[in-house]
Each structure stands twice: as structure tokens, then as C-alpha cells.
Image (cartoon, rainbow, N blue to C red):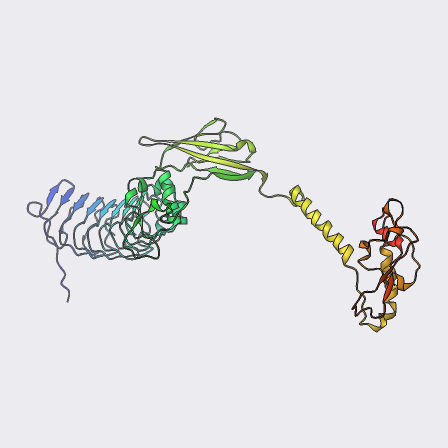
Length: 484
């Protein structure tokens, strides 16, 4: 049977120190939080005690003015999901240096106004995907020095779950791989304070490219902890780690250095150039390649094609060739002055090309190929006799007579045996010298015998055959139109 410990009444003289709306009960070896806390309480410090569980009934009445609760350096292993139902306006919660092993479903969902959650140096291994639901105002989340093995990508993806999150500390955990594609598209103000050093990451060029890109942008998460950004070579025992920025050496993985790339667009496109700064809520001033200055005037369009959006991005509609070049964004605030460059390249064609406006070189190539195919078909693809049908056996020679007329522009009334001799090789025969006339043309009345085709099973009884009418041969190369 479990014994329920009862809370002792608040003792501001011996146990705790009470100063107006602040109460500190630190280092008093308390196993439960004192009862009778005043309703005007704004800050409660119960650090360095012996608390083990934080149940729903740890306070009997709502503390609507409580904004800071410090519970670090205890022995807390369990926090009820209903433990914060009576503290709806809590903005700072410190549960660091305890013995939490998991963050269960909707563990902190009741803290809709919480801004800072400190959970470092626990034994957290599992984080439920809904543990931080409804925490739309959370800005800083400290999860370092735990046993986390999976990067909680749902916390940073598209800014849906934690839209105001600006710091996520996952350093010194057991994470071995990162979702690099999702991390590369993070806004700079979030990647600037996404701390991942001290993990068990596996070395690869994708990881190197991510950190190099952040280092080029001078993001604090890589610049401040450059020497602690280490990884372990794959397929080796995890005994010796190397610095991530050494992966471009030939001694290791010879990774390529990643350069910042610009944007490539087509004519008539609409493009948005982001001023990806390291801090939120800054004022942006854009300068175009033609040295035109554009400022943000409550969404009012500067001209017909360029306008400044509410988030400070530059929108260009109906892109023209004149719009290409380097655009400069000056981000300014009380604590930050940052200059960003975006290079815009414009292709000299629209994105959706009409079928009638194909590239001239392409159509020329297609036309040449088609012409060659037609010529080959004309020269080589002569129809074959079909001897398998007895009814057509007697008509074969007549068909050859018709076919041969295709190659001759003049009527030909020679015997069918002479016409059958016309084959696809006839256009390439070299006539003898005595048959040539003026300019090397064949004599109109010349003829020549040619030996039969040896070992020809289709013509076993034709030892000798004559060439076709020379006029037919010369007609192939003449300028006389061929009529079929």
C-alpha cells in the first residue's frame, strides 16, 4: 500500500522565504510542496529538494498569477498531465536535473502560455509526438543532456506545432542521424539557435553540407560550438570522433564544399525572395540590381511588378530579363544589422512552352532523322513476294511490273523476266565503260548480262539474268517527277 504524503503548511519563518509574491523553499529537504500557497503567488522556487512526483493535486486552488515554477535538482520521475491545470498562466517551468524518463502524451498541453521549458539533464528517452501540443507560445525548449535518440522533427516542421519556437537545445543526446532535408529549409532565425553538438552523429557528406551552409551564414549554433560538432565515421567502432568540418579532407570523406546558390526562374513567373535573417521582427530594406530601394509600407505595392510582403520578402511578378541580377536585403533592428544577397537568374523562355514554339534546333534534328528514315525505306523496304498463297502465284510477276514502274518515269514493256531482275541493288550497279555516254550517263539502249546469284534457293534455275532497262536505272537519279 502506497503512503500518500501530506503537505505541510507554508512556513514563511522557518521553512521558506516569502518576499511579496515570491516564495523560495530551496534546499529544505522537502518531499512535497507546502500547502496553503497564497493566490497572489507569482514565482515559486522549490529547487534542491527531495520531490519525486508532481501530481494533479499538488495545489488545491488555482494559482492564476503564477508565472514561474522552479523544480530543478529534485528526484522527480513522474509529472501528471493534469499537474498544470490550475496554473494556466505559467510562462517559465524548470524541471532540469531530475529523473524523468519519458514525456507522455499531452504532458504539457495545459501550458498554453508557457514560453520557456527547461528539461535538460534528465534521463528522457522517449518523447511522445503530442507531448508539446497546444503550446503555441513556447519560445525556448531545453532538452540537452538526455538520452533522446530521435530528432523530434515535428517540433520544427513548418512551424505548425510550435510557431514561436526560436531555441531548441538537443545537444549531448544519443541522436545518430538528422533529417537533413527538413533542417536545410528551416528559417535562419530558428536554425541559428538549433543546438545539436555533442550527439552520436554518423559522418556523411549530407551532414557536412548542412553544417557548412549554417557556418557560412554565421549561425550561432555552428559558430559558437564549432569544435564540438563531431561525428563518427560509418562502419567503424564509435571510439574516436572527428570534427564535421574535416569531412572535406581527402583523408576522410572528401566532401565537396557547398556554396550558396541563387534562384532560377522563367519569363513571366512570379517569384518571392526571402530575407532569411537570424532574428525575427526586423525591418527589411531591399535594393535591386538597378540600385532601386524598396521599403515596406504596410503591404503597399511599390510599382506594378515589385512589392514587399508582410514578412519582409520581396515579390516580383511577371519576371523579365531585366530583373536578373543580385538583390540585397538589409535587415535592421536594435540588436542586429545583417546583409543578405539573393542572386536571381532568368531563363529566356516561359515555363510553359506552346507546342508550336518548339526549339528550332530540335525540330531541325527531328526533320533530318525523319528524312533519312524515309530515304532508307524508299531504297530498301521493297515488298516481298508472297509465294505461300497459290492463288497469287501467277500474279507475282504482274505485281513486279507494277512495282518497277515506281522506279521508272517512262513506260516499260519488256518481258516480266527482265522486270523481275530489278532489285534493290540496281541503283548501285557500276555500268561498264562502253555504256556510258556524255557526262558519264548510261546509254539509253544499253544492256548488260549479269551472272546469277550463287546458292540462291529462291532462284535455282536462273544462272544468268539481265539488268533492267537502263532508262529505269537512270530515272532514279533524274529530275523527272516520280508518279505513283
